[in-house]
Figure 1: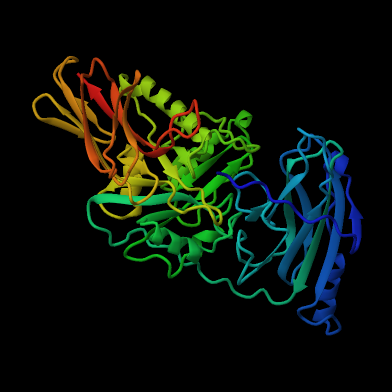
Figure 2: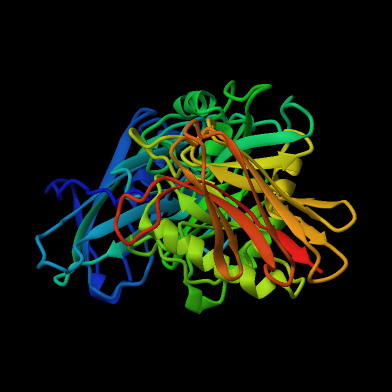
Amino acid sequence: MPAPHPAHRPIARRGLLVTTAATALTLSTLSFADAADTQKAEAQGAGAPEGSTRTRTVRGVLPTGSPDYVYLPVDVPRGVAEIAVSYAYEKPPVPAGTQGNALDIGIFDERGTDLGGPGFRGWSGGARSSFFIRADEATPGYLAGPVRAGTWHIALGPYTVAPEGLPYEVTVTLRLGAAGSTPEPVYPPERAKGRGRAWYRGDCHLHSVHSDGKRTPAEIAAAARAAGLDFINSSEHNTTSAHGAWGGLWGDDLLVLTGEEVTTRNGHVLALGTDAGTWVDWRYRARDNRFGHYAKAVRRAGGLVVPAHPHATCIGCHWKFGFGEADAVEVWNGAYTPEDEIALAEWDNSLVATARSGRAWVPAMGNSDAHREPDKVGLPQTVVLADELSREAVLAGIRAGRSYIAESSAVSLAFGASGGRGQHAGIGQRLRVAGGDTPVTVRLEVTGAPGCTAHFVTDQGTLFTATLPESGTGTVQWRTTPAYAAYVRAEVRHPVSVPGLPGALAALTNPVFLEG
């Protein structure tokens, strides 16, 4: 599930203070005029030595009802090698049922803060209290590169604001000196050796130290291999800084895709498998009518649009953009919960609307959303039939719904339907037979699910249930017709543990559509 918003240290009273007109949310420019003067003096041989620093601190209060993003302008003079930012804010106690203070942070360079523009230089949300940027290196979540002269903007995101407001403090330090050089990023290859046409296991929703996770990319890669995965997707919140952090971690056995978790105030969406280095903006709500524009940007970059944990209960996590632009939807996120049960039911309802129309349908997928121990990488995992272990083939399999979801690599499924004159269709396909009354046999083979039951779900609901052998390995068959079932999909469930709720999933498939 999405990580809770981190808390930050209280404001420390220190430094040169500049009070902002926070109630108007027009923040005064943080100026380093004397740093520019120093550079001029240095040119004349009388200035501070290279490596000297200049620091400014600004305080203000963001009121309730603040914009989603407030920008603090910072005038950066020539001759700056590094910009470092730290921040703090107060978290006063609030009455029960009232949201307290939580403040996110990021930065845009002199190219501006326009939506989708080139000025983005990093975002850490609420995961860090400080960061730096210089030509050769940057804090994870931020993009290394020259610190050019001009007006930079520190982006403050008041995630939630207490009734009395959100007092904050931001400290900016510039280190003077030569700019240095920026190495070319090394991105993961788009193909791994693989096993030819086969079922490949992947986890496409993972977080490292480049956003609000605690694992390093190396630790994630090791956990992915231990979980039996063939591919993973880098999906940090609102930043691409991890795209170049996988050097030496991919291999013949592990394909690393690059993407982003686009974290808006009206839900989160995976930009899955986009071109390396592609950044997707997140600064809009459903009422702004901008999501379609950015969904198209994801596809132009070769990726898939996948709403994540659509019924998560964290603030801003519940999906409100609809599924008209979705290429797939994450119906299972981490350890199975009632939130996933709701997402699964909503997705199943969408199948009813598309089963007979022939219109495009939205496949289901599952991912771990793992952030830190004890989150398990690969719980769950999407198992995709792909022609090869490559970015193009894996994304094509997910988009076509040629996939199922399993709680671990120990669980394997084979599912399909046959009927008529030898016709057969597998997961994500359509079985077309001569008439609506033509008998169709649905078959499910399961391994690795001891103590579980198999369920065949149709547009009418669950029409067949069978207990699997004690070993968890068995075959289940059921006969139906296209007139009786517009589609059939399979679920494998654990025993009921919460009265009134179905047992947790061990696996589920995308549907086979029946036409006659």
